[in-house]
Length: 166
Image (tube, rainbow, N blue to C red; front, side):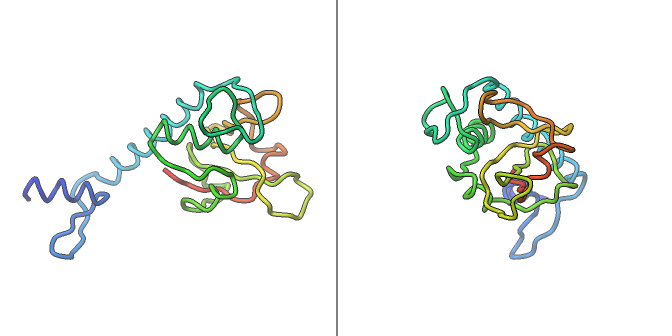
């Protein structure tokens, strides 16, 4: 197989397009793709950690890193870590990516929440990054950018949806 065809296949997400026919690359490409995604997710969390303790301010503009609200934090982290442009608000961010269930969360997934565990409304009011190991990386109120426990807490009871954007 010519190198040009292999490179074209890599650029097309791991599939070779030869005169309209798409075929998977031979070998362990699926394993390599999984490691690549894990690497990106790890980098997202690493970049997010740089901002631990940064104060929360509702409506904080995207242009600053002195303060964040939940969606400007997620927007900044994804742009810096993986050059992924996300919309500005949590509700708009919830329209991007592939929907995943709580039981299939992976590091780097975005989780969207409603205001209260008891409200019937599904109106999204908050977004966090799933950091793995039952932790959320996000910002709110007094702690600012922080890690929070997810399962068995109010956060888990408030989930509206989750999205995979990596």
